[in-house]
Image (cartoon, rainbow, N blue to C red; front, top):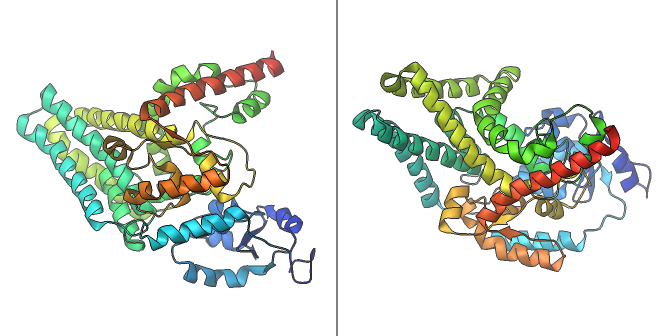
Length: 427
Protein backbone atom coordinates (compact mmCIF):
# COMPACT_ATOMS: atom_id res chain seq x y z
CA UNK A 1 0.00 0.00 0.00
CA UNK A 2 1.08 3.59 -0.51
CA UNK A 3 2.33 5.36 2.53
CA UNK A 4 3.29 8.89 1.53
CA UNK A 5 -0.02 10.74 1.84
CA UNK A 6 -3.24 10.52 3.83
CA UNK A 7 -4.02 7.17 5.38
CA UNK A 8 -4.62 4.66 2.59
CA UNK A 9 -3.86 7.24 -0.11
CA UNK A 10 -0.90 7.50 -2.47
CA UNK A 11 0.79 10.76 -3.38
CA UNK A 12 1.73 11.67 -6.94
CA UNK A 13 5.35 11.89 -5.84
CA UNK A 14 5.27 8.24 -4.79
CA UNK A 15 3.45 7.18 -7.97
CA UNK A 16 6.06 8.84 -10.18
CA UNK A 17 8.83 6.89 -8.47
CA UNK A 18 7.31 3.61 -9.70
CA UNK A 19 8.19 4.02 -13.38
CA UNK A 20 11.00 1.52 -13.83
CA UNK A 21 10.87 -1.84 -15.69
CA UNK A 22 10.75 -3.88 -12.49
CA UNK A 23 8.53 -1.49 -10.54
CA UNK A 24 5.53 0.04 -12.30
CA UNK A 25 2.42 1.75 -11.01
CA UNK A 26 -0.14 3.74 -12.97
CA UNK A 27 -3.37 5.64 -12.31
CA UNK A 28 -6.83 4.99 -13.73
CA UNK A 29 -9.78 7.14 -12.60
CA UNK A 30 -7.95 8.28 -9.48
CA UNK A 31 -6.97 4.76 -8.39
CA UNK A 32 -3.42 3.41 -8.32
CA UNK A 33 -2.58 -0.01 -9.76
CA UNK A 34 0.62 -2.03 -9.53
CA UNK A 35 1.14 -3.46 -13.03
CA UNK A 36 4.68 -4.77 -12.47
CA UNK A 37 3.77 -8.45 -12.81
CA UNK A 38 0.66 -8.00 -14.94
CA UNK A 39 2.54 -6.16 -17.71
CA UNK A 40 4.01 -9.43 -19.02
CA UNK A 41 0.50 -10.90 -19.36
CA UNK A 42 -1.08 -7.79 -20.87
CA UNK A 43 -2.78 -8.81 -24.17
CA UNK A 44 -1.53 -5.63 -25.84
CA UNK A 45 2.05 -6.31 -24.83
CA UNK A 46 4.26 -5.06 -22.02
CA UNK A 47 5.40 -1.91 -23.78
CA UNK A 48 1.99 -0.33 -24.33
CA UNK A 49 0.92 -0.54 -20.70
CA UNK A 50 4.40 0.23 -19.36
CA UNK A 51 4.55 3.51 -21.27
CA UNK A 52 2.19 4.98 -18.66
CA UNK A 53 4.13 3.79 -15.62
CA UNK A 54 4.19 6.61 -13.06
CA UNK A 55 1.49 8.51 -14.99
CA UNK A 56 -2.27 8.91 -15.33
CA UNK A 57 -3.43 6.32 -17.89
CA UNK A 58 -7.19 6.96 -17.56
CA UNK A 59 -8.00 8.14 -21.09
CA UNK A 60 -5.55 5.73 -22.73
CA UNK A 61 -7.15 2.86 -20.80
CA UNK A 62 -10.64 3.84 -21.96
CA UNK A 63 -9.56 4.40 -25.55
CA UNK A 64 -7.99 0.95 -25.92
CA UNK A 65 -10.62 -1.16 -24.14
CA UNK A 66 -14.15 -1.53 -25.50
CA UNK A 67 -15.39 -3.78 -22.69
CA UNK A 68 -14.46 -1.73 -19.61
CA UNK A 69 -16.61 -3.79 -17.23
CA UNK A 70 -14.74 -7.03 -17.96
CA UNK A 71 -11.31 -5.40 -18.02
CA UNK A 72 -11.84 -3.66 -14.68
CA UNK A 73 -12.27 -7.07 -13.04
CA UNK A 74 -8.59 -7.71 -13.72
CA UNK A 75 -7.66 -4.45 -12.02
CA UNK A 76 -9.01 -5.47 -8.60
CA UNK A 77 -6.05 -7.70 -7.80
CA UNK A 78 -3.64 -4.93 -8.86
CA UNK A 79 -5.18 -2.18 -6.74
CA UNK A 80 -2.85 -0.20 -4.47
CA UNK A 81 -5.09 2.61 -3.27
CA UNK A 82 -6.63 5.97 -4.23
CA UNK A 83 -4.57 8.96 -5.32
CA UNK A 84 -4.35 11.63 -2.67
CA UNK A 85 -6.46 14.70 -3.52
CA UNK A 86 -7.22 13.38 -7.01
CA UNK A 87 -9.22 15.85 -9.07
CA UNK A 88 -10.18 15.81 -12.70
CA UNK A 89 -9.11 18.82 -14.73
CA UNK A 90 -11.48 20.93 -16.79
CA UNK A 91 -10.11 19.24 -19.91
CA UNK A 92 -10.87 15.84 -18.35
CA UNK A 93 -14.45 16.81 -17.68
CA UNK A 94 -14.99 18.34 -21.12
CA UNK A 95 -13.45 15.38 -22.96
CA UNK A 96 -15.59 12.94 -20.97
CA UNK A 97 -18.65 15.01 -21.87
CA UNK A 98 -17.58 15.02 -25.52
CA UNK A 99 -17.11 11.24 -25.44
CA UNK A 100 -20.60 10.71 -24.04
CA UNK A 101 -22.06 13.09 -26.63
CA UNK A 102 -20.56 11.27 -29.62
CA UNK A 103 -21.57 7.95 -28.11
CA UNK A 104 -25.18 9.08 -27.74
CA UNK A 105 -25.15 10.36 -31.31
CA UNK A 106 -24.22 6.86 -32.46
CA UNK A 107 -20.85 7.77 -33.96
CA UNK A 108 -19.32 4.55 -32.66
CA UNK A 109 -21.84 2.47 -34.60
CA UNK A 110 -20.45 1.15 -37.89
CA UNK A 111 -22.15 1.23 -41.26
CA UNK A 112 -22.19 -2.38 -42.40
CA UNK A 113 -22.88 -1.20 -45.93
CA UNK A 114 -19.74 0.93 -45.91
CA UNK A 115 -17.48 -1.86 -44.73
CA UNK A 116 -19.10 -4.34 -47.11
CA UNK A 117 -18.37 -1.99 -50.01
CA UNK A 118 -14.76 -1.61 -48.85
CA UNK A 119 -14.34 -5.39 -48.82
CA UNK A 120 -16.03 -5.70 -52.22
CA UNK A 121 -13.57 -3.10 -53.50
CA UNK A 122 -10.69 -5.34 -52.41
CA UNK A 123 -12.19 -8.40 -54.09
CA UNK A 124 -12.80 -6.54 -57.37
CA UNK A 125 -9.28 -5.09 -57.40
CA UNK A 126 -7.70 -8.48 -56.68
CA UNK A 127 -9.64 -10.14 -59.49
CA UNK A 128 -8.81 -7.32 -61.92
CA UNK A 129 -5.12 -7.41 -60.97
CA UNK A 130 -4.94 -10.97 -62.26
CA UNK A 131 -7.60 -11.08 -64.99
CA UNK A 132 -6.35 -8.07 -66.97
CA UNK A 133 -3.05 -9.78 -67.81
CA UNK A 134 -4.58 -13.25 -67.93
CA UNK A 135 -7.06 -12.11 -70.62
CA UNK A 136 -5.19 -9.37 -72.51
CA UNK A 137 -1.65 -10.71 -72.16
CA UNK A 138 1.46 -9.20 -70.62
CA UNK A 139 1.99 -6.28 -72.99
CA UNK A 140 2.96 -2.95 -71.48
CA UNK A 141 -0.63 -1.59 -71.25
CA UNK A 142 -2.30 -4.56 -69.50
CA UNK A 143 0.85 -4.89 -67.37
CA UNK A 144 0.52 -1.28 -66.19
CA UNK A 145 -3.24 -1.61 -65.60
CA UNK A 146 -2.68 -4.77 -63.56
CA UNK A 147 0.11 -3.05 -61.66
CA UNK A 148 -2.13 -0.09 -60.88
CA UNK A 149 -4.95 -2.36 -59.66
CA UNK A 150 -2.49 -4.24 -57.44
CA UNK A 151 -1.12 -1.03 -55.92
CA UNK A 152 -4.60 0.32 -55.18
CA UNK A 153 -5.55 -3.07 -53.74
CA UNK A 154 -2.60 -3.08 -51.35
CA UNK A 155 -3.10 0.53 -50.25
CA UNK A 156 -6.83 0.15 -49.65
CA UNK A 157 -6.23 -3.15 -47.85
CA UNK A 158 -3.93 -1.24 -45.49
CA UNK A 159 -6.71 1.18 -44.60
CA UNK A 160 -9.42 -1.41 -44.01
CA UNK A 161 -7.23 -3.77 -41.98
CA UNK A 162 -6.51 -0.73 -39.82
CA UNK A 163 -10.25 -0.44 -39.14
CA UNK A 164 -10.50 -4.08 -38.07
CA UNK A 165 -7.32 -3.79 -36.02
CA UNK A 166 -9.06 -1.11 -33.93
CA UNK A 167 -12.26 -3.21 -33.53
CA UNK A 168 -14.20 -0.58 -35.49
CA UNK A 169 -16.62 -3.00 -37.15
CA UNK A 170 -17.78 -5.90 -34.98
CA UNK A 171 -16.17 -4.68 -31.73
CA UNK A 172 -15.18 -8.27 -31.01
CA UNK A 173 -12.59 -10.91 -31.90
CA UNK A 174 -14.32 -11.24 -35.26
CA UNK A 175 -12.58 -7.97 -36.22
CA UNK A 176 -9.22 -9.68 -35.82
CA UNK A 177 -10.40 -12.65 -37.87
CA UNK A 178 -11.07 -10.33 -40.81
CA UNK A 179 -7.87 -8.40 -40.13
CA UNK A 180 -5.91 -11.66 -40.23
CA UNK A 181 -7.37 -12.41 -43.66
CA UNK A 182 -6.66 -8.95 -45.09
CA UNK A 183 -3.19 -8.54 -43.59
CA UNK A 184 -2.05 -12.12 -44.04
CA UNK A 185 -3.64 -13.44 -47.23
CA UNK A 186 -4.26 -10.17 -49.11
CA UNK A 187 -1.11 -8.26 -48.07
CA UNK A 188 1.36 -10.90 -46.90
CA UNK A 189 2.18 -9.13 -43.61
CA UNK A 190 1.95 -10.42 -40.05
CA UNK A 191 -1.15 -8.92 -38.37
CA UNK A 192 0.36 -9.53 -34.92
CA UNK A 193 3.44 -7.55 -35.89
CA UNK A 194 1.33 -4.62 -37.09
CA UNK A 195 -0.84 -4.61 -33.95
CA UNK A 196 2.24 -4.81 -31.71
CA UNK A 197 3.77 -1.68 -33.23
CA UNK A 198 0.63 0.29 -34.01
CA UNK A 199 -0.78 0.29 -30.50
CA UNK A 200 2.54 1.54 -29.16
CA UNK A 201 2.19 4.40 -31.63
CA UNK A 202 -1.30 5.22 -30.38
CA UNK A 203 -0.27 5.00 -26.73
CA UNK A 204 2.49 7.61 -27.10
CA UNK A 205 2.39 9.19 -30.58
CA UNK A 206 5.53 11.11 -31.58
CA UNK A 207 7.20 10.35 -28.24
CA UNK A 208 10.88 9.54 -28.69
CA UNK A 209 11.85 6.00 -27.58
CA UNK A 210 8.18 5.05 -27.15
CA UNK A 211 6.54 5.55 -30.55
CA UNK A 212 8.12 3.08 -33.01
CA UNK A 213 6.98 5.27 -35.90
CA UNK A 214 9.54 7.94 -34.97
CA UNK A 215 12.35 5.46 -34.20
CA UNK A 216 14.06 6.37 -37.45
CA UNK A 217 17.18 8.17 -36.23
CA UNK A 218 19.51 5.79 -38.07
CA UNK A 219 18.33 7.33 -41.34
CA UNK A 220 16.31 10.45 -40.44
CA UNK A 221 16.02 12.93 -37.58
CA UNK A 222 12.72 14.77 -37.16
CA UNK A 223 11.33 17.45 -34.89
CA UNK A 224 13.31 19.88 -32.74
CA UNK A 225 14.57 17.51 -30.02
CA UNK A 226 15.81 14.44 -31.89
CA UNK A 227 18.25 16.30 -34.19
CA UNK A 228 19.94 17.94 -31.21
CA UNK A 229 20.18 14.73 -29.16
CA UNK A 230 21.57 12.75 -32.09
CA UNK A 231 24.08 15.46 -33.02
CA UNK A 232 25.38 15.65 -29.46
CA UNK A 233 25.67 11.89 -28.90
CA UNK A 234 27.01 10.66 -32.26
CA UNK A 235 30.09 11.75 -34.10
CA UNK A 236 29.49 9.21 -36.86
CA UNK A 237 26.04 9.29 -38.47
CA UNK A 238 24.15 9.94 -41.67
CA UNK A 239 24.52 13.40 -43.27
CA UNK A 240 21.12 14.44 -41.97
CA UNK A 241 21.46 17.89 -43.50
CA UNK A 242 20.79 16.09 -46.81
CA UNK A 243 17.85 14.02 -45.55
CA UNK A 244 15.20 16.11 -47.34
CA UNK A 245 16.95 15.11 -50.58
CA UNK A 246 17.61 11.42 -49.95
CA UNK A 247 14.21 10.82 -48.29
CA UNK A 248 12.54 10.05 -51.62
CA UNK A 249 15.20 7.43 -52.40
CA UNK A 250 15.65 5.82 -48.97
CA UNK A 251 12.29 6.34 -47.24
CA UNK A 252 9.21 5.31 -49.25
CA UNK A 253 11.00 2.87 -51.61
CA UNK A 254 12.55 0.90 -48.74
CA UNK A 255 9.78 0.72 -46.15
CA UNK A 256 7.55 -2.01 -47.63
CA UNK A 257 9.96 -3.87 -49.94
CA UNK A 258 12.75 -4.08 -47.33
CA UNK A 259 11.88 -3.10 -43.76
CA UNK A 260 8.38 -4.59 -43.62
CA UNK A 261 9.53 -7.97 -44.92
CA UNK A 262 12.51 -8.21 -42.58
CA UNK A 263 10.50 -7.05 -39.57
CA UNK A 264 7.40 -9.16 -40.19
CA UNK A 265 9.33 -12.44 -40.57
CA UNK A 266 11.61 -11.58 -37.66
CA UNK A 267 8.53 -10.97 -35.48
CA UNK A 268 6.91 -14.23 -36.60
CA UNK A 269 9.96 -16.37 -35.85
CA UNK A 270 11.04 -14.68 -32.60
CA UNK A 271 7.54 -14.80 -31.13
CA UNK A 272 6.75 -18.21 -32.66
CA UNK A 273 3.49 -17.29 -34.39
CA UNK A 274 2.44 -20.26 -36.54
CA UNK A 275 -0.90 -18.71 -37.56
CA UNK A 276 0.79 -15.58 -38.89
CA UNK A 277 3.38 -17.70 -40.68
CA UNK A 278 0.69 -19.75 -42.43
CA UNK A 279 -1.26 -16.62 -43.41
CA UNK A 280 1.79 -14.94 -44.94
CA UNK A 281 2.84 -18.19 -46.63
CA UNK A 282 -0.62 -18.51 -48.20
CA UNK A 283 -0.23 -15.03 -49.65
CA UNK A 284 3.04 -15.88 -51.40
CA UNK A 285 1.73 -19.26 -52.62
CA UNK A 286 -1.36 -17.53 -54.05
CA UNK A 287 0.64 -14.74 -55.66
CA UNK A 288 3.26 -16.86 -57.38
CA UNK A 289 0.77 -19.53 -58.46
CA UNK A 290 -1.26 -16.82 -60.20
CA UNK A 291 1.49 -14.74 -61.78
CA UNK A 292 4.34 -17.17 -62.48
CA UNK A 293 2.56 -18.83 -65.46
CA UNK A 294 2.26 -15.38 -67.07
CA UNK A 295 5.47 -13.63 -65.99
CA UNK A 296 7.81 -16.38 -64.82
CA UNK A 297 9.44 -16.49 -61.39
CA UNK A 298 11.76 -13.53 -62.03
CA UNK A 299 9.02 -11.50 -63.72
CA UNK A 300 6.58 -12.22 -60.90
CA UNK A 301 9.17 -11.17 -58.34
CA UNK A 302 9.83 -7.91 -60.19
CA UNK A 303 6.08 -7.27 -60.43
CA UNK A 304 5.71 -7.90 -56.70
CA UNK A 305 8.58 -5.56 -55.78
CA UNK A 306 7.14 -2.82 -58.02
CA UNK A 307 3.75 -3.15 -56.32
CA UNK A 308 5.28 -2.95 -52.85
CA UNK A 309 7.52 -0.04 -53.80
CA UNK A 310 4.63 2.03 -55.19
CA UNK A 311 2.35 1.08 -52.30
CA UNK A 312 5.11 2.14 -49.92
CA UNK A 313 5.18 5.62 -51.45
CA UNK A 314 1.41 5.93 -51.04
CA UNK A 315 1.45 4.76 -47.44
CA UNK A 316 4.49 6.79 -46.36
CA UNK A 317 3.31 10.12 -47.74
CA UNK A 318 -0.14 9.71 -46.18
CA UNK A 319 1.06 8.53 -42.76
CA UNK A 320 3.94 10.99 -42.45
CA UNK A 321 1.90 14.00 -43.54
CA UNK A 322 -0.21 13.63 -40.38
CA UNK A 323 2.61 13.15 -37.88
CA UNK A 324 6.14 14.08 -39.00
CA UNK A 325 5.37 17.79 -39.13
CA UNK A 326 3.93 17.88 -35.59
CA UNK A 327 5.52 17.97 -32.11
CA UNK A 328 8.09 15.21 -31.58
CA UNK A 329 9.56 15.14 -28.08
CA UNK A 330 10.58 13.00 -25.14
CA UNK A 331 7.77 11.86 -22.84
CA UNK A 332 6.36 14.90 -21.03
CA UNK A 333 3.45 12.97 -19.45
CA UNK A 334 0.97 15.21 -21.25
CA UNK A 335 -2.77 14.88 -20.87
CA UNK A 336 -4.17 12.30 -23.33
CA UNK A 337 -6.02 14.92 -25.39
CA UNK A 338 -3.04 17.27 -25.66
CA UNK A 339 -0.65 14.42 -26.44
CA UNK A 340 -2.81 13.11 -29.29
CA UNK A 341 -3.57 16.50 -30.84
CA UNK A 342 -0.01 17.85 -30.53
CA UNK A 343 1.17 14.79 -32.48
CA UNK A 344 -1.43 14.89 -35.26
CA UNK A 345 -2.98 17.15 -37.87
CA UNK A 346 -5.83 16.78 -40.32
CA UNK A 347 -6.02 17.00 -44.10
CA UNK A 348 -8.98 18.76 -45.68
CA UNK A 349 -12.04 16.65 -46.41
CA UNK A 350 -12.97 15.73 -49.97
CA UNK A 351 -14.25 12.56 -51.61
CA UNK A 352 -10.79 11.89 -53.05
CA UNK A 353 -8.90 12.69 -49.84
CA UNK A 354 -11.21 10.44 -47.81
CA UNK A 355 -10.65 7.53 -50.19
CA UNK A 356 -6.94 8.16 -50.80
CA UNK A 357 -6.11 8.33 -47.06
CA UNK A 358 -8.65 5.78 -45.85
CA UNK A 359 -10.33 8.64 -43.91
CA UNK A 360 -7.10 9.10 -41.96
CA UNK A 361 -7.17 12.68 -43.14
CA UNK A 362 -9.13 12.99 -39.88
CA UNK A 363 -6.12 11.84 -37.91
CA UNK A 364 -6.90 14.02 -34.85
CA UNK A 365 -10.31 12.45 -34.36
CA UNK A 366 -8.94 8.97 -35.03
CA UNK A 367 -6.32 9.36 -32.30
CA UNK A 368 -8.84 10.66 -29.78
CA UNK A 369 -11.38 7.94 -30.64
CA UNK A 370 -9.32 5.08 -32.16
CA UNK A 371 -12.18 2.58 -32.26
CA UNK A 372 -14.62 4.95 -34.00
CA UNK A 373 -15.54 3.73 -37.52
CA UNK A 374 -13.64 5.92 -39.95
CA UNK A 375 -16.71 6.96 -41.94
CA UNK A 376 -17.93 8.85 -38.84
CA UNK A 377 -14.74 10.72 -37.99
CA UNK A 378 -15.70 13.84 -39.96
CA UNK A 379 -18.95 14.09 -37.97
CA UNK A 380 -17.15 14.53 -34.66
CA UNK A 381 -14.54 16.95 -36.05
CA UNK A 382 -16.53 20.15 -35.29
CA UNK A 383 -17.00 19.04 -31.68
CA UNK A 384 -13.30 18.29 -31.28
CA UNK A 385 -12.41 21.63 -32.83
CA UNK A 386 -14.68 23.41 -30.33
CA UNK A 387 -13.01 21.55 -27.45
CA UNK A 388 -9.58 22.60 -28.71
CA UNK A 389 -10.66 26.23 -29.00
CA UNK A 390 -11.99 26.24 -25.46
CA UNK A 391 -8.72 24.86 -24.03
CA UNK A 392 -6.37 26.77 -26.35
CA UNK A 393 -5.08 23.66 -28.13
CA UNK A 394 -3.97 24.09 -31.73
CA UNK A 395 -6.22 22.21 -34.17
CA UNK A 396 -4.48 22.08 -37.54
CA UNK A 397 -6.05 21.27 -40.92
CA UNK A 398 -4.11 21.40 -44.21
CA UNK A 399 -4.68 20.86 -47.92
CA UNK A 400 -3.25 17.51 -49.06
CA UNK A 401 -0.53 19.14 -51.18
CA UNK A 402 0.57 21.34 -48.27
CA UNK A 403 0.68 18.36 -45.93
CA UNK A 404 2.94 16.46 -48.36
CA UNK A 405 5.16 19.48 -48.89
CA UNK A 406 5.47 20.00 -45.14
CA UNK A 407 7.06 16.56 -44.82
CA UNK A 408 10.01 17.68 -46.96
CA UNK A 409 10.16 21.09 -45.30
CA UNK A 410 10.19 19.44 -41.87
CA UNK A 411 13.04 17.13 -42.90
CA UNK A 412 15.07 20.11 -44.13
CA UNK A 413 14.44 22.14 -40.98
CA UNK A 414 15.40 19.22 -38.72
CA UNK A 415 18.43 18.43 -40.87
CA UNK A 416 19.64 22.02 -40.63
CA UNK A 417 19.22 21.92 -36.85
CA UNK A 418 21.25 18.69 -36.71
CA UNK A 419 24.03 20.24 -38.81
CA UNK A 420 24.18 23.37 -36.66
CA UNK A 421 24.36 21.32 -33.44
CA UNK A 422 26.83 18.81 -34.91
CA UNK A 423 29.22 21.57 -35.97
CA UNK A 424 29.01 23.09 -32.52
CA UNK A 425 29.97 19.86 -30.73
CA UNK A 426 32.23 17.98 -33.16
CA UNK A 427 33.95 20.48 -35.46
